[in-house]
Length: 354
Image 1: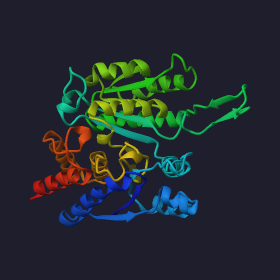
Image 2: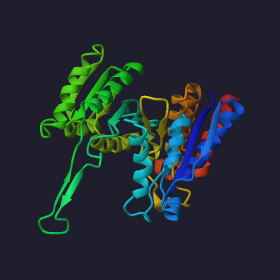
Image 3: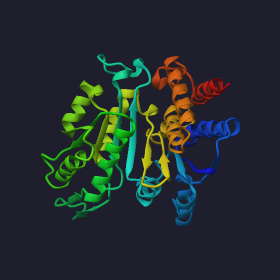
Image 4: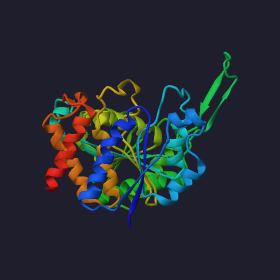
């Protein structure tokens, strides 16, 4: 069957980093016969400012029913200060499509990019499995007496047994599928005695179903500290929405920066969302300095999800070789612009095939 992919360039540098990904996918379709259908969608700040609509319900329904994947560049524009369109598009897909796993692979591809003097690229190879639909980002809360000296603001951290358990099970299942040996829970159950106690208790219960996997629970502050001291100790980390957001950006620094960080948003069905995590970076628009590798590695994750594992490895290897040869953008030690850095990857993929 043909895999239909909804493509959203989005805002800022999003269209710039997605363009070479489309070239890559078109090359695979043309030269290797991959059954792919690319469906560009006009979603982002421009449409929102023009029409007052971020993501039409009928279009969202069509994506959910027809597509195998969504490839997203970035969403975020200073002309929309409350990020209303970003919430409707990104959170609308994560929550609306029940993509409850935010998967953040953290793998250093070059020794030179690891900022820890005692570590090499071989020491940085783990996955953060972050809950994606609940927690402190669920949007629950209230403000009382806004603007007064007595103002009270409350953000509620929503954790359900179903949501916590399915995320933790996904982490253990991933660990088993990838032949890894350890799963860490990052929690704060010593201070947050309700929701975080649920995470700790559920982790212990789920771990019993995976007796061959070593299970360790660690307070998130201690884990963040130890992640910088000995990253090789971590293989799979499961955690909630807020902690996962913070840890995954911290972890991106270990692999060379946000410009190299891919992500996947997965649910129980086939439809999944793939995006680089660097954001829309308005200050880089049109400068040619945006790093395309995070988007290309996200595209590689998407190819693997769709069953094209050979092509996934081909892209990942091409990015690795580009980084190690220094043919990359300035943020990772190179001197190339966005298009030229992406062209290096495209050339290497084609050369491998030839």
